Length: 263
Image (cartoon, rainbow, N blue to C red; front, top):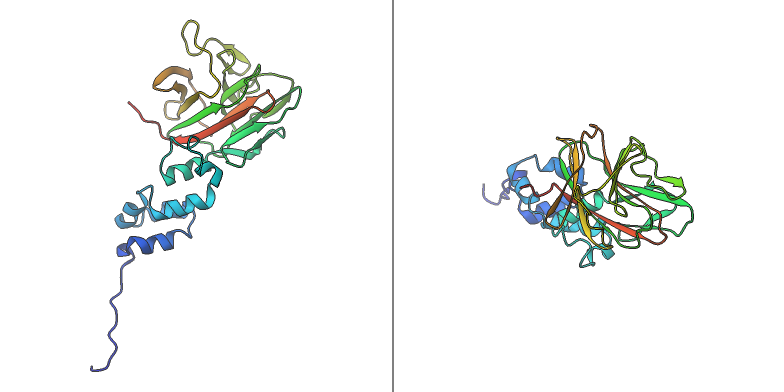
């Protein structure tokens, strides 16, 4: 009829333009966004782009500026989604010895200069399925104990004296970078890597810890070098990245890389 206002045709949610999706998705949690990826191909295609506007917005909102502005710290996780994922898997300040704290960048743990104490920390998220890789760098003196490895949620994170706490019981598995010993349930096996006169860890070197939950093994890499399987027959429970240290003012940075590049 003449003069009747024409009605606009409804637009399907599956056809919303990307700039509209970005405005809507920025208010959702990561868990909700994971559900959104399963709604339709259009939404999945948008969210699979790891540098899209919504991932950038969430990353800048949650990841500390000091981490994002560091040209070296997150260089192995170049996209906004990868940085956000790494932050969700970073050190857990609430699951640590009272003698350590997580620096403002969110990825580096600092041990206070406390005498006669061994102090550890776990990551925020444990895993029990799939493949996972973490990059670790010890950024200070090692002292007599500097252990990297895995722990269940029940493993102790502080004890008196200077001892390799990670690997001292059946709840943790560790590699002491000081003497290249592998530690589990109080047993010490040397050397690792499994070669004669393995090279000593150099402060600042980046090493990768790779956990294969399907094969129940963990191994380490340095650069492009595979160092061999460190532990096998791991239990089918949630395992957390962990470290323990004894030297005052030493620091350890950890970046979750996601699934490793296989082959």
